[in-house]
Length: 621
Ligand code: MG
Ligand code: MG
Image (cartoon, rainbow, N blue to C red; front, side, top):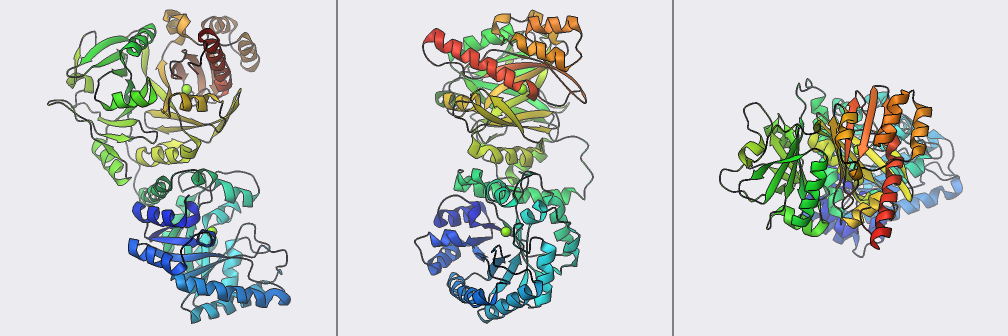
């Protein structure tokens, strides 16, 4: 199959779209009429631009409100078609894509529609053009692909076929069974779009919420499996109308489109293979903080108050490791390093996260296959060369080989200065990392973690912030959990974090323990975020919590949630440069305490306002 993209999927002008599609590696492009209308080059010049850059024009689209019109306006529709054929000819596009009529004038008469399309196809044939007919979900009379196919079959013209668009199929809840009746050569074009499963008007759903396969909830993989079984070998084109894509970078959206198609191909192959016994990701190997000495002392105070000790020093760099259980926090103050330049841009923040994997070679290959940008680190002789790629927020992701035969990173690059197996207060491992993403990059990030790291996203959750709405989604893959948040509200905690840190990604690091009550008693309570009394009144009303336990939770500032699988206890530290830590005790529970997020955010808002009042300027959002 040939990979194509429709120009309306990409932001920018037509010239930028063509360049980005070619650079990302698409074979072809669909020219959306409006993109041509507003462009200052003639169709023949656009044709030459595409030819010179090695991009095939696969269609011109869409031709609207054509079929089954009353006699009075029918001739006018054919005249309009002739003028469009002139443009399509000049453009060198092989196909006119016609979408089903939405005009209130359209007649509910399938044989009339078939006769019109047959006549249109005859005229197109004279110009060497094929016609593809698509059922729009909001068409006046033709809404479903089965009806469009019946019309195309009745029209019976060799250069007339159907266009299958997954958005229209799935937003109408169409069965895929009718696909098996369509000879593959009669499918002129396949358009792919995913979308979140929203109960709303299909036109609004289509115009604003389409997304790439892998970013939404439609069964695109099943559709592609069926298409492959049919023997379809034509063009598959990404046709996305998205508010988020419109505000993104042309290059990034095109790049994500290719990534999405690579993932789809892989999903089809994987469906035939037995599932892997070992997950791709084992866990978090370390979290690395970029800072300078004064703030490093501050971090050390906070880490020690959470039970960490500085257990290792890097052999050649100004880098320290704080350990507790299997939580590794790296503090990097090395001048002339990635961490240093990250600190210059973002302030004290998380500049890198390392994932460990038992399938190291395979994961490294995946990062290449999915077009990840590698990062070359400066390493001294005898130091580990840990591969790194850029995360979507510009921080780094390291990939660490984890197996019995391989030493841990701190056994090679670091020297021990304390007990390497320091148990501290009982923190055991990193439970999850929370990232904030700018709204224009939210879907892009989701696709990145899903495709490269085989992490599965959970449905999105709306979290109320005192100053706006925050959208939160979680991704889980093997031993790695990740939560990603975004918000359009300028004063929400997420947006303030992005502004304060110039777009640093990691906002919180959550670490797990087996006994949060014992841990909370060992902690320095002045470092913790306090929940209001009202929160605990509500807890006792919602859940049957033992009275003595509730009293301890109230005293220690512990938050609580439950799901069908078990209980969850949480504690939060105060924030530094918007960054904070969470301590969790998970008892089978699979969520992230989303129900507690509004209480946490409101408490953080109070911390922010208190700090503002105390210092006379904004700090610690
Ligand atoms: Mg379409
Ligand atoms: Mg969390």
